[in-house]
Image (tube, rainbow over all chains, first blue to last red):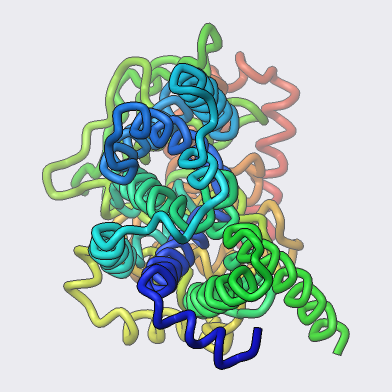
Length: 274
Length: 248
C-alpha cells in the first residue's frame, strides 16, 4: 500500500471517525494520566476497563448502546472503588481488584447467557474502528471538552493534591470531591476509549504517554503537553499501521506507545550521562 | 493575648490503642509552644487531629471566632513526596500553599518572589524540588506554609533531617518569624534542649499531658518528675540550664 492510498483511506467516513475519536481520547487520557500515574493510582483505568467489559456485555444482551449504559455504571464503579479504599481501609489496588474481577465475572456470565463471545463483544474487548458511530463522535467531542475544561479549571487543586494529599487538605481544598471528579473523568475516558483500543488495552493510553512524557520533561505542565503529543502521535500512527498492514488497531496503538516508552527511557539515560 | 485554639479533652483511639487521652491545652496569639515527648507519645497524632487530617475519638478543638484552620501553616515531618523525579518546580510547590480563595485575593507571583527572598531561596524557584538539598527543601516547604500568611505555624520535627549547623539556622529563622512577624508557633520536637531556648510554653506529651505550662516552669514540674523519674528530669534540666547558660 503506497502513501497516496493510505491518505485516500481517510476519505472514508469510518477512518475519519476513528481519527477524530482517537485523537480526542488521546488528549483526554493525557490530561488525566499525570494525576493518576504520579499518585500511583493508574491501575484504576485497568479496573474500570474491566467494568466496562461487563457493561458492554450487558448492553449487547439488551441490544442497547454500550456508551450510554457504560458511562453511568463505570462512573458509579469508580466512586465505589474510592469509597472502598477511603472508608473501609482497603488499599486502592485491592479495591480496584475487587471491583474489576467481580465485573469481569459478571461480564463473562452475561456473555455466556447470550450465546458466548460474539463478534460484537470481541470488537469491544480489543477495539474496532468499524463500530464508531456518528453519535459516538459527537458524544466524544462533548465529553472530551468536559474533561479538558474540568482539568484546566481544577489544575492548581489537582496538582496540589497529586504532590501532597495532606497539605492539599490542610490548605482547605476539598480533596474528597476532587478525587471523585478525577474518578468520574477517568470513567468517561475509559468508556470513550473502548471503541478504539478496547477494554483490555484502554488503560495503556492513560499510563504509557504519561510515563514516557515524564522521562522527557522537566515540569508538570510540560509533562501533560508531551503526553498529549505522544498519545496523539501513537493514535495516528497506530491507525496508519493497522490499516496498512491489516493489524488490530488497539494493539498497534499500544505497541507504538511501548516503543515510544523504550525510546524516551533511552533518551532520558543519554541526557543524564551527557 | 486572645486565644486561637483550645483543645478540650481530645482523645484519639486507633482501634483499641489509645494514641491520645483527654488532651487539654490552648494556644494564644504570639505563643511559641513546643510539644515534646518520647517517640510514639502522640505528638504528630495530636497535630494531625488539630489540622483535621484524622478524626478525634472524643473531645474537640475549639477555634476562636476570628481564627480558622485555613489560617494555619503546616510544615510536616517528612517531605510527603519521596519521588525525586516528581516534575515540579520550587515555584509550583510554594504555589500549592494558596487555595482558590487565596489566589483571588493576592498577587501570587509577587508574594512568592518576596517570600522566597526572605527565606533565601529566590535563586531556586525554577529548580526541581527533588534535586534540592534537605535544608533547601525545608525552606521551600516553610515558604509553602507561610505563603498564605498564617496566624499559626505548625512545625513537625522540622530539623530532624538537617545537620546541626543548618538546624540552628532554621531555629533562628523560626524565632525571627515569631518575634518580627508575630506568627504563633507550635513546634514538635523530641529535642527539648534545643526547643526550650525559644519556646514560651512546653507541652510534654506521653499519650496524655504530663506537663503543660510556661517553659520556665518545666523543671519544677512534679508531674514530669513522676512520669520520667527524678534522674531523667535532673538530666533534662541540667542540659536545659546549660544550654541557656551558653546562649546567655
